[in-house]
Length: 325
Image 1: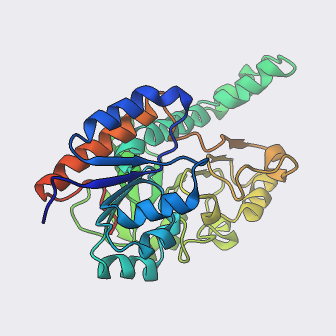
Image 2 (image 1 turned 30 degrees about the vertical axis):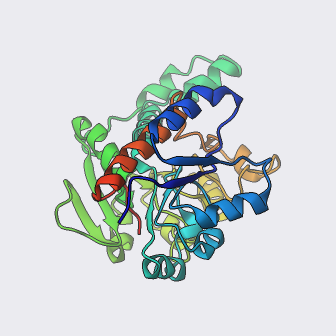
C-alpha cells in the first residue's frame, strides 16, 4: 500500500501563539499533503476534505470518520477518547480497517506529576496551611503536625492501568507505598499487583488513596457510586483525573460533609466547567483544578512530535504507539 504520498487532514486546535508548532507540523509531514482546518472554516469544506484524506490528526467527530471512504488512521490529540469508546463505533472502525490512536504519550507525564503533587500535598497538609495563610493567618502547628501523614506503607488503589497509571507507579514507588490496580484486561506482565475489575469492591475497602483514571463510557458511568464510596475506610482520599462522569459527585459531597472521607481531589467534573453555584466548590476538603492536569507549556509541540513519530511508523508499516483500535 502506498504510504509515500498521503493526504493528512488536521483540525488540531492551534491558536495564534502556536505558529512554531504549525511550522513544525508543516515541515515534519514532508512530501505528504497537509490540509488544516479551524473552527472558523466551513464545515462542508472540512467534511469533503476528511472524506478524501488518508490520515486525520486532531479530534474529528466519529460520525464524520465513519462516513469517510478513504481514512486509514486517526490520531486523536487527547488521551481521552470518550466519543469513540462505544462498541459499535469500534466495530465499524475495525470493519473499515481504520486504526485509532490517542495521545497518551503526551499526557501521561503531566497527569502523573499532577497526581503525585496532590497526593503528597494532602498527606503533608499543605492545602490546609495555605488556607490559613490566605485566611485568618492562625498558626495551626498543633493541628497540622499530627494530621500530617507519611505515605510509607499506605495503599494506593489505581482504577485503570493505562499510560498515566503506569507513570504514576514509577513516581510513587520510591515512597514505599503499596500499589495495586484494577483494569478490564489483565495481561499478567504489569509491574505491580493488578486485579480484574470485578475485584474492585474488595480492594476499595483496603485503600488509603483511590486514584480514578477510568475513561468515560457506558460501563464506567458513576463507577464510583454511593455504595462504593461508602465502603471506603474512614480517612481515605479520592482523586479523579479520568472523567467526571465516572464519579457520583452527589455521593462524594455527602461523604465529604460527613467527614468520613478525608479529602477529594477533582481535576475533572460533570459538567465542565463546574457551575459557579455547584456545592462541590464549597464542600469541605474538596480540591478542584479546571481539567488542567494534562497541561504543560510545550503541550502543542509534544502533540505534534508524537504525531510525527507515529507518522514515520505509519510510513514504514510499523505498529503505531498508543493504539486504541
